[in-house]
Image 1: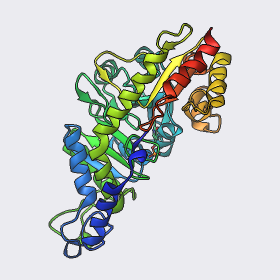
Image 2 (image 1 turned 45 degrees about the vertical axis):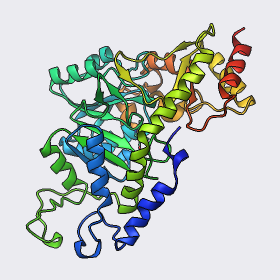
Image 3 (image 1 turned 90 degrees about the vertical axis):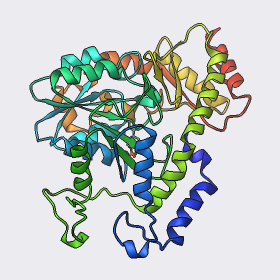
Length: 386
Ligand SMILES: *Cc1c(COP(=O)(O)O)cnc(C)c1O
């Protein structure tokens, strides 16, 4: 799994620097007290540079990042936003919170948005698409981007699991109009709680920056208490201690991804020839974050059996099959807006997705992996499939 496994002295040093420089925990202002220490600002700049994009804005969470992105495109009540049926509840919550109507497209064998089904869900009310690079495997972003361009829709990439992944050499999160990231404690790099939005264009960046800070334009011509504003907003500001941790974690991103990939293939090599399992499709020319290794079995009974065998030998699965209720829209009858959008029949709204998800098994990839783990996994599977 993720950056929390490597939390250490580097993060501590960055945090200490904030206190050694004057202890200003607010992301801007207080210039006389902070000895030039601006951790959040530096984190944003380094993050944008890492992804070869123009602007980045650090915020309080990945969910907040989605909410701000939707404010930035000017979403209005009644506007439809299409996302995918397999995601974390946060993606749909952000749409609801922004006053939009959430519509979920089916997924395909990549376990991400099915471009053909996306096309079918577009109506005259559709305003934006939020594609999710679920569990570290890129979505079919080239096709989806093309559809959004053709139909004049804003594309937002929920890159919560995709930090460091790419397609055709272009970083995930930088294909769409905006890309959002999460740094919660389970994600590839972490600030405890936190998120980021990346932007191609300056106007979007300025609008988002103001909206996440009560409308503050941070006009350099006036002090903050006389600051100018064009609209109201909210408070989703990241604070300096999180920025400090983020800087240290970002420096570790490449090595985290390297460990992930090595461990992923150590397991894959042991199980790839087992008859009865097939692997999640990875779109051409894509680089995964290798956050999980996902395979399909024949039916949901066998998927549950895999989970049970793994638990017996002290190994867990990740989200699939056990946490489906938090990650499959077909289960979210507590979201009235979602139920309403599919005429009350949520349980049967995403048959293709349901079929795939119920027979999928996800193995978490950790940085620190016991050397006998791949063999243990392989043995457990062979017990079921021979
Ligand atoms: C984690 C996650 C989020 C939310 O991020 P938080 O930082 O926990 O708010 C959004 N979307 C997806 C797909 C996620 O996995």
